Length: 250
Image: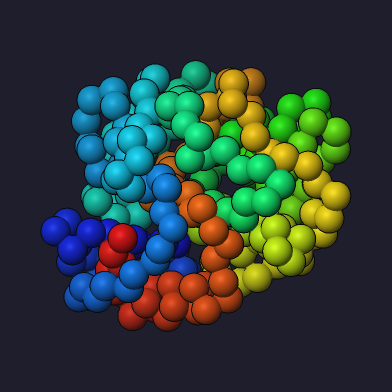
């Protein structure tokens, strides 16, 4: 799971170690560039979910519950009941990616049971005939579907769902190599070719957490969007710092 905290808010108790256990440690800053949305859920109350990236990609909460302590990966998080809870982020050009734009998305989730066959902790369009991308945490696998207006490509994070512990899912869309690359707990999965995939711009569909009709049941923490393809070195740095229980910075 990613802990990309600011120096001013760096939390001394880092609870995610990649094995669902609790750990403690000091703070260390590792710069990660290109972030266009940073949602750490440390608002802790109210109906607004803020964006710490500086791009103003905040959202509005409906029904989801703020949680902290051992219920969060660190700091605060949001619990979704799998029935009618959701968060809708603002429409923004910084979250739209055309045929020339690489990008990466990372989330942290904790799930005990599923609300349906496919729960969506995050969605930005996706699914023919729409364009966009999503995360689909299902009873049989955990995947991402990326699509233009003509076809879908499914990328698998893990073939068997992992329950009862915090996990990270990082989706890398690299338009230079024409690959969609999944990382589950920072371990690279099977890349899929996206050669020929068109634009994933969907200017009428905001990014959302817990999609209506595909509601997510579980806790969501530290969601980030990067306007670049994260590299294997980025993943190595994050994994090593996580094992050392270190904080990250913007």
